[in-house]
Length: 418
Image (cartoon, rainbow, N blue to C red):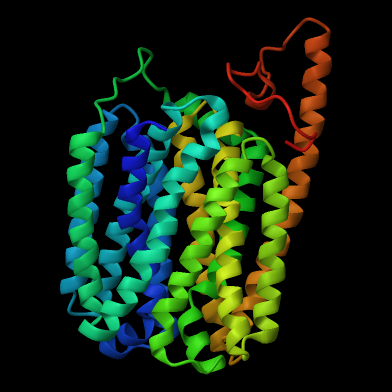
């Protein structure tokens, strides 16, 4: 992997810590801002909404701008958003700071993913994305538990200050380690980029990503009160268990990144199915502390095991528009991160209890399995059609990216569900 890819993963550590750390800070934020825990949970959705909106908008707005300059600007804005959150006197201002930070985070993800993909061979895409997603995993291992620890001992605002400092370090890294990337000889054309949305496989990829992510974060967003109110653990356990989820995420990302390039659909189906089983188990056994702790780790493994494959899949079906492909994946993940916490808050408001968030999450991941099966069926049909056309000695002008001649270095071996 080029050093630039690892640098992007380091920057994502700061982004991911900010995105996920509120899972361990909801109770103190709710108390300080005098709002309910479900309303405090909307701060998670606010960040996700900003990501959904910001990813495609900023991808389009920066399409013809130098990518290094864009990354520098966005990480700077993100850091300032953390400072604004730390100083926020009211819930409304804190909410707005989360949206601004998310817009910058979304743009950084979209451009950063395109840079990472552009620096590696076709058959290393999932591994490159695994490095970036590894930043999220480490954020869950170190950043989120550290945020929960700071919130418990020094107030929730200290966690925002810490992420602001991490953003400053990431800015220095981008300035010194990300090379200047020349713009392509042919200027990107917005119409050509937008044409990817005519492919139903792109929309299926969006649906799969949103449902898979939303199902996990429907439960994860309320993991802190579930552990204390349902499992009966003390608040002191929460940072450690959040860290355990992060360890699982790191394990899952590492395995998924190495396997997904050769067995993409196999990873998607097995990983999302495992998340469904673990979420159902959490709903059934949340009152048992040992089960709740073990399942927190396993859900981290299964959720992030599929993440490299979800990212690589979008770049495979939308290869004609790499910047928008990265933006679309970011938006899809955060559609799930918006809908999941919202659905979780809704079942809590219905007095169904914190354990019901896992049932709701499992229903979303079950839908993701169905969407993956449909996508696999279409992929097989399209691939078979492409082979027939290729055997005839002609390739139609409108051949979709999936069945275009394989780039150099593409892995063409493996089972039929690759």
